[in-house]
Image (cartoon, rainbow, N blue to C red; front, side):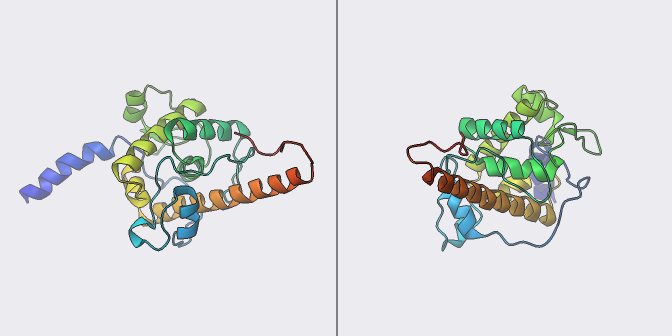
Length: 217
Protein backbone atom coordinates (compact mmCIF):
# COMPACT_ATOMS: atom_id res chain seq x y z
CA UNK A 1 0.00 0.00 0.00
CA UNK A 2 2.81 2.40 0.87
CA UNK A 3 4.53 1.62 -2.45
CA UNK A 4 1.33 2.39 -4.37
CA UNK A 5 0.86 5.70 -2.58
CA UNK A 6 4.50 6.62 -3.25
CA UNK A 7 4.07 5.79 -6.96
CA UNK A 8 0.97 7.98 -7.22
CA UNK A 9 2.66 10.81 -5.36
CA UNK A 10 5.55 10.74 -7.80
CA UNK A 11 3.59 10.35 -11.04
CA UNK A 12 0.46 12.48 -10.69
CA UNK A 13 2.23 15.88 -10.57
CA UNK A 14 4.17 14.92 -13.71
CA UNK A 15 1.04 13.99 -15.63
CA UNK A 16 -0.72 17.21 -14.74
CA UNK A 17 1.99 19.18 -16.55
CA UNK A 18 0.80 18.04 -19.92
CA UNK A 19 -2.44 17.65 -21.77
CA UNK A 20 -5.96 16.84 -20.63
CA UNK A 21 -8.65 14.41 -21.58
CA UNK A 22 -9.69 14.26 -25.26
CA UNK A 23 -13.23 13.34 -24.25
CA UNK A 24 -14.56 16.68 -25.48
CA UNK A 25 -13.48 15.84 -29.03
CA UNK A 26 -15.49 13.88 -31.57
CA UNK A 27 -12.90 12.25 -33.82
CA UNK A 28 -13.15 8.84 -35.47
CA UNK A 29 -12.22 6.09 -33.01
CA UNK A 30 -11.86 3.03 -35.24
CA UNK A 31 -9.41 0.41 -33.97
CA UNK A 32 -6.15 0.90 -35.82
CA UNK A 33 -2.87 -0.93 -35.35
CA UNK A 34 0.24 1.17 -35.98
CA UNK A 35 1.81 0.51 -39.39
CA UNK A 36 5.53 -0.16 -38.73
CA UNK A 37 6.50 0.75 -42.31
CA UNK A 38 4.96 4.21 -41.98
CA UNK A 39 6.54 4.82 -38.60
CA UNK A 40 9.86 3.67 -40.02
CA UNK A 41 9.65 6.28 -42.79
CA UNK A 42 9.74 9.01 -40.19
CA UNK A 43 11.96 7.39 -37.60
CA UNK A 44 14.37 5.15 -39.43
CA UNK A 45 13.48 2.33 -37.02
CA UNK A 46 13.75 -1.34 -37.95
CA UNK A 47 10.48 -2.81 -39.17
CA UNK A 48 11.21 -6.23 -37.80
CA UNK A 49 12.05 -5.03 -34.30
CA UNK A 50 8.88 -5.31 -32.22
CA UNK A 51 10.39 -3.12 -29.54
CA UNK A 52 10.78 -0.26 -32.03
CA UNK A 53 7.42 -0.74 -33.73
CA UNK A 54 5.90 2.29 -32.03
CA UNK A 55 9.12 4.24 -31.71
CA UNK A 56 10.19 7.54 -33.19
CA UNK A 57 13.80 8.63 -33.11
CA UNK A 58 14.09 12.42 -32.77
CA UNK A 59 16.17 13.95 -35.52
CA UNK A 60 15.76 11.14 -38.07
CA UNK A 61 13.03 12.75 -40.12
CA UNK A 62 12.15 13.04 -43.78
CA UNK A 63 12.59 16.62 -44.95
CA UNK A 64 11.62 18.60 -47.00
CA UNK A 65 8.00 18.36 -45.98
CA UNK A 66 5.18 19.38 -48.32
CA UNK A 67 4.35 23.05 -48.73
CA UNK A 68 0.68 22.41 -48.08
CA UNK A 69 -0.58 20.58 -44.98
CA UNK A 70 -1.43 16.89 -45.46
CA UNK A 71 -5.03 15.92 -44.90
CA UNK A 72 -6.17 14.17 -41.71
CA UNK A 73 -9.74 12.96 -41.93
CA UNK A 74 -12.04 15.79 -42.98
CA UNK A 75 -10.27 18.40 -40.89
CA UNK A 76 -8.80 21.44 -42.61
CA UNK A 77 -5.51 22.78 -41.24
CA UNK A 78 -4.68 26.41 -41.94
CA UNK A 79 -1.58 26.96 -44.03
CA UNK A 80 -0.30 29.33 -41.34
CA UNK A 81 -0.46 26.59 -38.70
CA UNK A 82 1.37 24.13 -40.97
CA UNK A 83 4.23 26.62 -41.30
CA UNK A 84 4.40 26.88 -37.51
CA UNK A 85 4.44 23.08 -37.21
CA UNK A 86 7.36 22.78 -39.62
CA UNK A 87 9.17 25.57 -37.79
CA UNK A 88 8.68 23.73 -34.49
CA UNK A 89 9.75 20.46 -36.10
CA UNK A 90 13.08 21.90 -37.13
CA UNK A 91 13.68 23.64 -33.83
CA UNK A 92 12.86 20.67 -31.61
CA UNK A 93 13.61 17.82 -34.06
CA UNK A 94 10.11 16.39 -33.85
CA UNK A 95 8.09 15.18 -36.83
CA UNK A 96 5.65 17.88 -38.01
CA UNK A 97 3.23 15.05 -38.77
CA UNK A 98 3.23 14.07 -35.10
CA UNK A 99 2.65 17.68 -34.08
CA UNK A 100 -0.20 17.88 -36.57
CA UNK A 101 -1.71 14.60 -35.36
CA UNK A 102 -1.70 15.74 -31.74
CA UNK A 103 -3.34 19.04 -32.74
CA UNK A 104 -5.97 17.21 -34.80
CA UNK A 105 -7.03 14.91 -31.97
CA UNK A 106 -6.60 17.32 -29.09
CA UNK A 107 -8.37 20.37 -30.51
CA UNK A 108 -9.47 19.66 -34.09
CA UNK A 109 -7.22 22.61 -35.03
CA UNK A 110 -9.21 25.01 -32.89
CA UNK A 111 -6.84 27.58 -31.33
CA UNK A 112 -9.55 28.61 -28.85
CA UNK A 113 -10.28 25.06 -27.65
CA UNK A 114 -10.61 24.72 -23.88
CA UNK A 115 -10.95 21.47 -21.94
CA UNK A 116 -14.02 20.76 -19.86
CA UNK A 117 -12.21 21.74 -16.67
CA UNK A 118 -10.71 24.82 -18.29
CA UNK A 119 -7.12 23.77 -17.57
CA UNK A 120 -5.99 22.73 -21.07
CA UNK A 121 -5.93 25.32 -23.81
CA UNK A 122 -5.37 25.92 -27.49
CA UNK A 123 -4.30 23.83 -30.46
CA UNK A 124 -2.23 21.29 -28.53
CA UNK A 125 -4.29 21.57 -25.35
CA UNK A 126 -1.42 22.74 -23.21
CA UNK A 127 -2.08 22.63 -19.49
CA UNK A 128 -1.97 26.10 -17.95
CA UNK A 129 1.04 25.14 -15.83
CA UNK A 130 2.87 23.79 -18.89
CA UNK A 131 2.24 26.98 -20.85
CA UNK A 132 3.54 28.99 -17.91
CA UNK A 133 6.59 26.74 -17.59
CA UNK A 134 7.52 27.24 -21.25
CA UNK A 135 6.57 30.91 -21.24
CA UNK A 136 3.98 30.68 -24.00
CA UNK A 137 0.54 32.16 -24.55
CA UNK A 138 -1.62 29.03 -25.06
CA UNK A 139 -4.13 30.95 -27.19
CA UNK A 140 -1.44 32.15 -29.59
CA UNK A 141 -1.28 29.44 -32.31
CA UNK A 142 2.44 29.69 -32.93
CA UNK A 143 3.39 29.78 -29.26
CA UNK A 144 1.03 26.91 -28.45
CA UNK A 145 2.54 24.76 -31.18
CA UNK A 146 6.06 25.62 -30.05
CA UNK A 147 5.22 24.75 -26.46
CA UNK A 148 3.54 21.47 -27.41
CA UNK A 149 6.44 20.49 -29.68
CA UNK A 150 8.90 21.20 -26.87
CA UNK A 151 6.97 18.87 -24.57
CA UNK A 152 6.82 16.13 -27.24
CA UNK A 153 10.55 16.46 -27.90
CA UNK A 154 11.38 16.12 -24.20
CA UNK A 155 9.13 13.09 -23.81
CA UNK A 156 10.45 11.42 -26.98
CA UNK A 157 13.97 11.77 -25.64
CA UNK A 158 12.99 10.60 -22.16
CA UNK A 159 11.18 7.50 -23.42
CA UNK A 160 13.58 6.69 -26.26
CA UNK A 161 11.02 7.44 -28.94
CA UNK A 162 8.33 5.13 -27.54
CA UNK A 163 5.29 6.86 -29.00
CA UNK A 164 2.68 5.08 -26.89
CA UNK A 165 4.49 6.00 -23.69
CA UNK A 166 4.88 9.57 -24.90
CA UNK A 167 1.14 9.87 -25.57
CA UNK A 168 0.27 8.36 -22.20
CA UNK A 169 2.30 11.02 -20.44
CA UNK A 170 1.42 13.90 -22.76
CA UNK A 171 -2.27 13.34 -22.05
CA UNK A 172 -2.96 12.94 -18.35
CA UNK A 173 -6.15 11.00 -19.06
CA UNK A 174 -4.94 9.04 -22.08
CA UNK A 175 -7.02 6.05 -23.15
CA UNK A 176 -6.38 3.31 -25.72
CA UNK A 177 -8.91 5.05 -27.99
CA UNK A 178 -6.98 8.32 -27.73
CA UNK A 179 -3.69 6.57 -28.52
CA UNK A 180 -5.23 4.85 -31.56
CA UNK A 181 -6.63 8.16 -32.79
CA UNK A 182 -3.31 10.00 -32.58
CA UNK A 183 -1.37 7.14 -34.18
CA UNK A 184 -3.92 6.83 -36.98
CA UNK A 185 -3.78 10.58 -37.59
CA UNK A 186 0.02 10.48 -37.53
CA UNK A 187 0.11 7.67 -40.08
CA UNK A 188 -2.41 9.41 -42.31
CA UNK A 189 -0.47 12.68 -42.22
CA UNK A 190 2.78 10.89 -43.13
CA UNK A 191 1.14 8.97 -45.96
CA UNK A 192 -0.61 12.01 -47.43
CA UNK A 193 2.49 14.16 -46.95
CA UNK A 194 4.59 11.65 -48.87
CA UNK A 195 1.98 11.53 -51.63
CA UNK A 196 1.97 15.32 -51.90
CA UNK A 197 5.76 15.39 -52.21
CA UNK A 198 5.69 12.62 -54.80
CA UNK A 199 3.20 14.54 -56.95
CA UNK A 200 5.27 17.69 -56.54
CA UNK A 201 8.39 15.89 -57.72
CA UNK A 202 6.52 14.56 -60.75
CA UNK A 203 5.38 18.08 -61.65
CA UNK A 204 8.94 19.29 -61.20
CA UNK A 205 10.24 16.61 -63.56
CA UNK A 206 7.97 18.05 -66.25
CA UNK A 207 9.55 21.47 -65.77
CA UNK A 208 13.14 21.09 -67.11
CA UNK A 209 15.63 23.07 -65.09
CA UNK A 210 12.90 24.42 -62.87
CA UNK A 211 12.67 24.14 -59.11
CA UNK A 212 9.44 22.67 -57.81
CA UNK A 213 6.96 25.25 -56.70
CA UNK A 214 5.10 22.67 -54.64
CA UNK A 215 7.78 21.68 -52.11
CA UNK A 216 8.46 24.04 -49.25
CA UNK A 217 10.54 24.13 -46.10
